[in-house]
Image 1 (cartoon, rainbow, N blue to C red):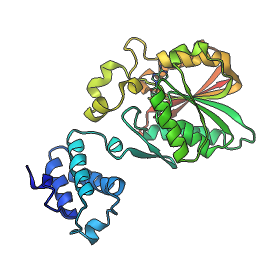
Image 2 (tube, rainbow, N blue to C red):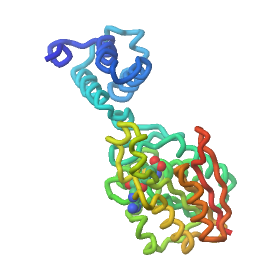
Image 3 (cartoon, rainbow, N blue to C red):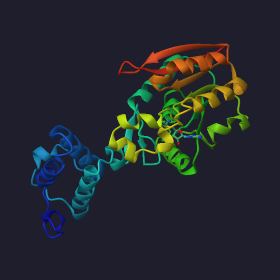
Length: 293
Ligand SMILES: C[S@@+](CC[C@H](N)C(=O)[O-])C[C@H]1O[C@@H](n2cnc3c(N)ncnc32)[C@H](O)[C@@H]1O
């Protein structure tokens, strides 16, 4: 047993930081370790990271000591910081996340930015559906930033939608949730004016380029599509849009840069659409806007 595990030995703040640095040295850089340590102090121990400089000999309470040990183990197993903290910030809201949902990405914040820009002068309510909502990051920030949006967030499983409603309450926002399979959208009767989706879009053959913390911890249901049908979800959503999207309605997709050309062909096979592409912060074509004529 190490002295860190001995409940009779009081751990001081600076000792906890040193334990992080020593035990995680083979996995992360010192800068990363210090960032994780400070995030855990603030997010899990309710300690201001400034105390590290101001009160380095602060004695940790037993629950804080346990938290240091547990989070250290989680970091050693390369569990993502966001799942350890259980919370992320997305645009201007805080959201709970757990391993049932994808950790929202900065690229997705840009997709929301685009929609908010396009609809900033809205003066009447319009119906919006977010297919594959996950944590609800898109649905909830759209509602927060454009109150005229009447938003329905769709996903496959009830526990995911429970988390979305928890996040809605946390942020005092009202949106609808719907448990529905995108593959069965031909059975959904829901007229809408705006569709947004960041569906699964990674092929299994891309696994070799992915990091362990994504592959082992993020839900594969949120990430992967069949190797032979990478546009599966887009096709079902486009089919739905051809029936249920009102004239002049718009679709916003986050996309895998590898399949942009194929997706454009697919969209144009539905005719009558005007397509605009947008790059993400990393310079990759990551977003499409599709306007119904
Ligand atoms: C890439 S994640 C996007 C999550 C969130 N919108 C975001 O941008 O962070 C895709 C989401 O689609 C959901 N999903 C996967 N297959 C689905 C299906 N057949 N029907 C409905 N939702 C599905 C997953 O559960 C996951 O939440």
